[in-house]
Image (cartoon, rainbow, N blue to C red; front, side, top):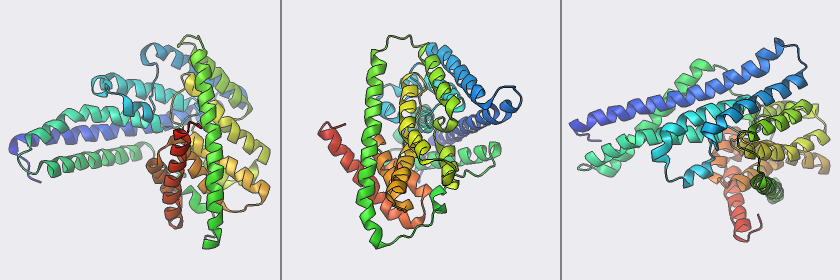
Amino acid sequence: MFIKKENQQTLLRVLLKSLVAGVVVAIFAASTTYLSDTLWSTLPKMVGLSPSAYTFVVCVVGGLLLGILQKYAVGYPRTIAELTVDKHLGETYRQDIPRVFITSLIVLSFGGSVGPEAPLAGLIVGLFQWMKPDLNSFTHNNKAVRVTEGSHNVHIIAGISALLAFLFTYRIFDTEKNELFGIFKQFTLDWGWQQLYLLPLAILTGVVFGIYFKYVTKWTEQISNRMTMPQTLRPIVGGIIIGAVGYYSTMFLFSGQQQLIAIVKQPTAYSLAFLMLVALGKPILSNVGFYLGWRGGLIFPAMLSSFLFAGVLASLVGIFSPIFVIVTSLAASVFINRSPLIMALVYLVLCPLSLYPVVIIVAWTSKYLGDQFVAHKLV
């Protein structure tokens, strides 16, 4: 790639900004982990409250903090769908980045029943907008020689630099291996062509659960839009509701990653009735919290709840196949989030190599079915 001498300074700024972007995202991820560990592992040993009472208090405190922030950061973090239609990101990124960072840190650390993908997307998009003028400047000034290839390569270099900065910085703060990666590899998969009959049944089961999740989202949004409650009060009420549910069981709280790991490791530690309660209840709590100011992503809540739903059904009807549970969860997650590429990448990380073709086929099949339901206004 040929770079004009006068453009080398622009390229250097792009590289430096990409490194800063990676460090910022890593600090956010590490800060969330550290604050969560402090709130839920260290502090409980220092206070004289029962675990249930402590959970309630922490969630209420989180609601109070979010209520205070509503004056400055209402509607943050925005979802990936909201970011894709926002035409003013280039004008608002300076305010967006700190708002996403602070509000998401509270939501994810204080027990919000949502995932980290929306905050991460918000930070990445905001940081990209910060880099964008230099990227555009390089493309414009270097157009004399192989523009397309040159600008494309610069974007790749910037992305790799940010990724390396993220990985290096995150490893400094968090040296423990994430047990979620490859979690489904622990299953013994008796994969064979004779099990192909399970795939349509699993996809159908996933679609059924996806319809349930979508209707919960729709009804929650409708109720929220009719509420006349002040914005500053909503997160406080949300904190009380989340805390009350957490008083009963913390299995309903957080994104669902740690709960998924615990259940896969010890599936018989919980009754089928309780697991079904979590499967049907978590979508409600996630959406109620979301529309009361405890905003975040719904990918991991959808994954956990659909996984439990499929697991309980499989146990009740005698389908002893991890493939059925995994495919159902994937189909439901794609149906709910309408993102086959993102969900396929997530499940490729979680699943053994033998399931890769199945993951790809199921992801796009579920997307097609979801499109048909939307086209016919069924969800």
